[in-house]
Image (cartoon, rainbow, N blue to C red; front, top):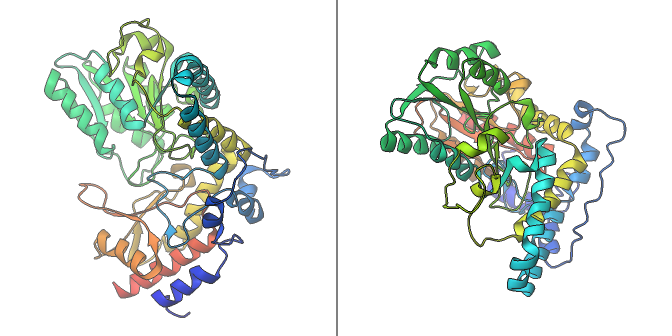
Length: 435
């Protein structure tokens, strides 16, 4: 095979259709009027696992996206760009609100917000009275962490692979109020669910009030057995706050499946909503005990809306969100989850026994989705990530400075064609030889 040089790379991008889609699509679409209607995508009679491997089906899905033509995006983990119908509805909503101004905000906005809340709650499988629309996971989680009345000496258990912003929020809470933080070590390659549950179980004492659990770890893509952790914690009278930033609309689940007390997620990740949207779930009977992050005393203590008080914000995003929900449903949560797992295993499975390449992501498909964390022995993550981009135009993110995880995060998304992952495999083979 010829080396994939920068010159060949440029010619490739100019002349090749990615998975049957001309790369000029994104530029052409920007000057056209795309329809915001979500057209159902017929999966036929195939089940999720078979559909995950049906390239004709996913080629049809890819026509609804407009990726930039000058690089290969394998960093969908930051956020997943919206499908074109979602983007068009966001733009259309912005024009409408801009034309109607205060009339919209004072007379129409609340109805739009409640319609969005209802659609989101149905997708999550909970009551609309348990869902607040936020800007991202960090805001959602901070509302709960800051809003719970924990006292000096109360214990909160969290893990060594939780997201940095959440750990910072917990540390601030500890410094202000004297709560005790207890960190546990989650194994990268667990032998069983019980091994993970036991890590949290051993940390619980009579003073433990809250477990902070990451559903799908952003560093490695590891999916934790959250329901089993919640059941164990509840047996001991401990509440559970779930960081589901990467799991919602990625792993196929609804919130009642977890039986958690609180959950935060970012909708602009795997639901592919407009950027700047998140969700906070609080179990109905828990709402009165959570203080709002922003002052709001005119609402009842049990009203979830007290937790989403932000003032004026871009409500056209909410219109796009409703379209994103319909688009997700048109594909099907189970089919999407199976596809994302398949994209992971498609490029990783051939390297699992490599003499230099190794993974910080479990091999078991039940323990991962799209995200994988890969490393080469003796090679710094920054060097590997740079090699992938400089030689193959593949965008990834190096994980550095973390005490447990060291490697490159590789995250395909719904629009990713297998061709991109074939290039990723070639790039890793070359990196292992040359670095």
